[in-house]
Image (tube, rainbow, N blue to C red; front, side):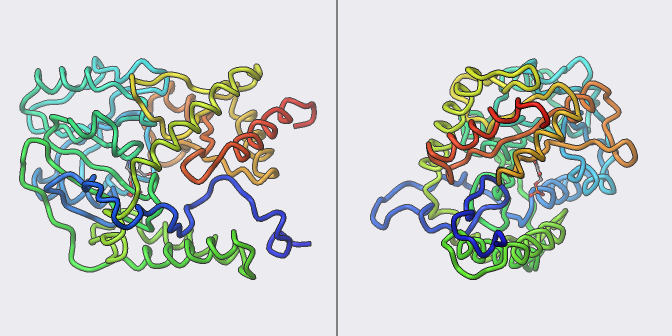
Length: 363
Ligand SMILES: Cc1ncc(COP(=O)(O)O)c(C=O)c1O
């Protein structure tokens, strides 16, 4: 029977969020808004960054961490001169001795996987007052660092951690003027919303084709890349209604439980990242594999078990790359297991079992 026909296989870990009313706060809960004020909203995180660097800084030199998303870099590349500093997912933080920024330059400081420490950046910013630092809080928009930042600007793409089809916020802890989104909405966000609604129906056993909503997701995502428009009206209305603290706390528990469980099974072929600033809520669980071949086989094995892990981030041999061999090497071995608010103990157990089976010969 096909995967769409058999209700018993309508379980998966990963891929995009479904439309999920369970993520909303209950009426009358009276929670204060979690959104920073004031803020500007965009459909995409790239769009927020492009709007900021072009509206306020002409065509500046933008310094990026060498372990970063190359699709985002490609979207930014025609608006800035790219420069790189080393940052690896190894708990050592940014190698600020490799950051060669001059007055008027812009630096993107990323809270990588939500595990980063703010102190090196706070110190560096004090010592370089003529360089604009934009903090990227996409991997944990609610971290203590994000909420009490002193940076010129902070941004976060929101659809990576929250069940909305699009949306990014930009704010300035120093009260700097914020750029506005281009008027109008991006059609890609509506494609993504359609995919989310269909996925919810599929998960609840309805006669919906998985390949159909996957195509809508991919088309929507492609259309969103680099878009500087406003978020959809739906995202704007839904964002303040989400029970963001509860969702984050479920992710925190899931990351802790899965990491502890994997540390008990550690296999020479992969090991989970364990570092993080005090109080950090990581963006899921990252496995560092022994080689690219191991990573790719593990990813395929998990996909056969309906666990769709993601790669952060491919740095292709041709095309844009940081040129940092150490970052390229880490990127070829990293695999992220999504364990966000959608999942519970029984789901984590299935992930642990599938990873346990991965050490069988013939993987
Ligand atoms: C850390 C980080 N920052 C920014 C972005 C850009 O966000 P968006 O995809 O909304 O443009 C991404 C996207 O993958 C990201 O992972």
